[in-house]
Image (cartoon, rainbow, N blue to C red):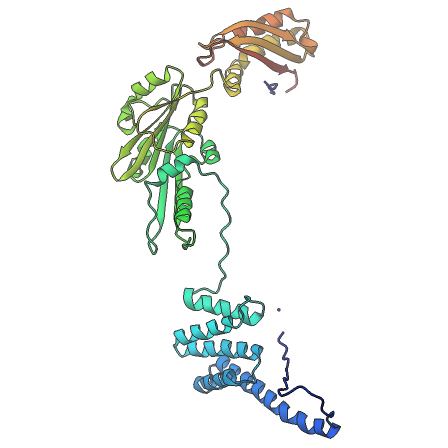
Length: 423
């Protein structure tokens, strides 16, 4: 027990000479001078036609003539791969402007088919973006969905059957949870009610290659206790409803028995044996109503952990074994509730010695019924020579009443309390 303290385009011309391989005299300089000008005008003319046609498409001028010019570039055996890419990009743009979307799509697909290794140039990336825009309305490249590593409990899969995945093209699926009481942090850690993620996992397992863009949305609402029930009546029918019940402040009044899988009196009687309880009530055309119950509120996390491991909905009430003894937070809550009396004991010491300070260690045992026995107090530091203070602390401790815990043997406790005259 811890002490308590108060991106350019380059043109490359490749010349292939056909015929038999053999020795031949080297061409004279005059031969070279006569042959070079013959090839240059052809290449320059192809590039010029491509540039003029692309510009016409960009400004929306004489589209039919530009389309014919671009098709001529594609049909020209002297065109390079880069020139064909540019011609197809401009041609697809002209075809789209003319209202021939299918031909525009086919032209883009032909461009990409000439690059089987995937996009490695700006022209290929532009073609992919235009293809997406024509088919989906957006040029944006789809981003991979981040991997969801949050847990999905077996019980969430048991609940998933109440939410069959809709067919493709539908609006999607909504999974709603309404909880009254309990700890949302524990539910998230265990994944007890992660039904939306369970539905998606099962969909992927059934068809790994299917489109996984179905909208599956989970909505969770949790009230602190049963008091939130009247606010939520209109939303109960279409949601998984979860009630948490304990024999303390979380006891649900009999007035709301119709909402529970079992009457509250029956639940309390079962909890009296020191075990937890889970139960479910089926509802026609709706997800079930669930009950998680424990003698003490601090034990509900144990009950939920047991439920999270179940592979079927407990339509019959099922007992959950619980650990015996009190939890540290339960002991701390009770002891702190008596700090007023402990302060009085200390103030009596300060009246005699204003500088007195130290740690008082209280030793005691808690019986199964919650009563205290075997109390002793050990004053430390400046409180070690204060018998009256130790007696006063022991007298205050013996009156503490802890929750009944069904422990077979008393729980031994050492609880240190630090006292100081300074705030």
